[in-house]
Structures are given as C-alpha cells and as structure tokens.
Length: 392
Image 1 (spheres, rainbow, N blue to C red):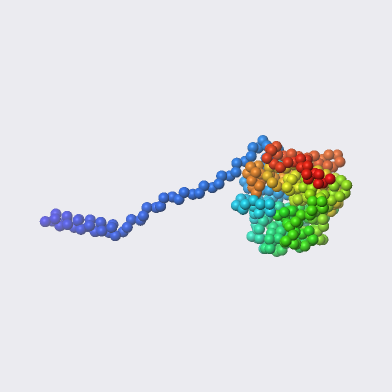
Image 2: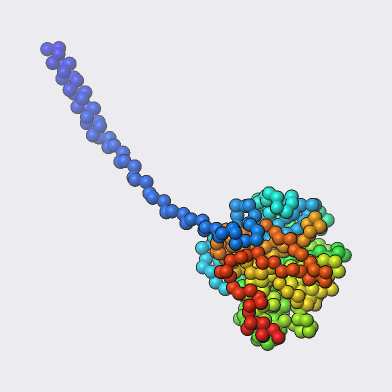
C-alpha cells in the first residue's frame, strides 16, 4: 500500500513538472546571423616603379600640401580627402572634405606624424561645405590657418583660425575674411616681414563669378579665348593676420612681350593653386594650369607682380589635379605635391608625396620635373598645339 502511495505521489509530481514545462514556452532559437555587406575593397595602388617619389607613409588620404618650416620642423597643411560617395563632376563636388589634419616631420624623408584634427567644419559658424586647400602662417608665436569653405549661400569665402601650436587646434574667427572670395589661399611672408595672401580658382573655385569685382551667380563664363585670362588675386594681410589690409588686386601673368596670358592659352594661363616664394632677388608665382595639369611659374620683382611666365616646374601627375608648395629646408629647396598613386587614379582620393628637390639655373629659372612615368595622363604642356597656337 505504501509503495502505491509513493508511486502515485511521484506520478503527480512528474505530471506537474510536465505541465509547468508546457506552460513556459521555450525561447525561440536565435535568428541566423545576418550576412554583412562586404565593404568595398581599398583601391589597388599603382605600380610604384612608375613614380619618382612615393606617398608619405600615413594612413589618411591627403592632398594640396602647403609646407612650412616652423621652429626647425617641417609642417604640411593638406586637404583631407575621403570617399564622400558624390559622383565626380567638373565643379569638384566629389571633393567634399570637412576637416584638416596637419602633418609634421623632423626632416625631409623622416617619419611623418598625422596630428589630431586641427579644425572641423562644424566648428566654423559661417561654413556649410567643402573645406578645400588650406595654408598657414606664423607671427609672434601665434599660428594662423587659412582655409576656403562655402558659406551658407554656397559662395566660397576664405576663413582664418588661430592657434598656439603649428598643429592646432585652431579656433575659427566668427566670420569669413572681409573681401575674400574663391579658394586656395596661400600666404607669403616677405623678407621685410610683411605678409601677403594669394587666392583664386576657376570652375568650382568660382573666380569667374567675380569678374566685375562683385559676386554674380548667373555669370559663369570665362573670357573669350582672345581676351586676357582671369588673374588670381593678392592682398596684403593686416597686422592682426585675420584681415586684409587692402582690397584684392590682380596678379598679372604676362608673356615675354609683356602681354597678359590669354584665356584660350590653357597651357600657360592660371587655373588654381597659387604659391609664392622668393629666391635671391626674384619673386616666384607658381600655380596649376588645371585642365592641362602642370605646375607652372612666372617671375617678378615685387610680391604684387607683374610676373613673366617662365615655364613648367612639375609635369602632369597621375590624377586630374596638380597642386603644390615650394619651401626651403636646411638650405635646399623642395616641391611638395600630390597624386593618386595609392588609389590608382581615383581623383578625390589623393596622397601627398615625398617632396622633390628643385634645381635653379644660373638665371633663376627652374629645371622642370617629371614625377610620373606612366602614359595614362593628358598630353604634356609642349604637346598641346591648339592652345600653344592660341597663345602666340
């Protein structure tokens, strides 16, 4: 009898356990893992043997290198390229850069440090988009970062940000520099201690909208081919380094007969990327010819010009843009430049290269440099008969 009771109790307990288990539904099995969309592969770099120098050993895309020596150290102020996903066009909308990171090195060819973000577009109250090629200057222990960016009305203006260190951080002034426009600011310190800012750029740089001296959003035309080309601009900086001391003036680039280069002379006329330096008693104004892809230069006797065209410093590189700076380091002169070696020709994914020493001739002219040995670039300057004929 006792055994039957025990069995009955055991059966009741088992039934209760079974019913409880039925009442508590087991959690559903986890869903199968979702397959992640594969990230696009990084572009395969081009053959290093095709290039005179190699990219700086850094982990960001960078371009438009403005190089300076401050306190015995080399600092490079570049654009910071990234893949915005915006289709390419002639106005450069794919170049959607939004911050700056300064590069620094103790010597040419030495290790390069990528410093933290020096200025972000979100910290520029008047800006909307496109932080393009910057430059920098030092005065009395303060450092000034000059940068082009579109304002809230999509007009390129030039801003300035101030810091206590060459690598930043920089604090932007609350407004753009008055009377500034277009892009590619380059600041030159003359031997008398005065500072000058050069700027301007065609097409997406909007210089053509300022032909009358005032912004005209409807006038996007270049001058006729047989008329003088649009000139870049120059203005002396005020003592505070954050304002212009005067209204911008034309930087006149002339041929050997003293005539302005013509708008149809795409081989020699200015397009963008101003840079000014002084060697011995000569002033040099160097620049990109844009759609003919060279870095060319002209010489003069004043920081205002006029400048007489002399030739090409840097032949076309891999990629559409060609942008540079020229600086003296330890008694030698170097050109800093960029190309698209790492991305194998993706125009908005550029890389600053190891600089190249330049060689002056006895008369002060500069020996041209060919830094790319490939054949997938536009014809070189001396192979553009139509433009050359227009220039005569």
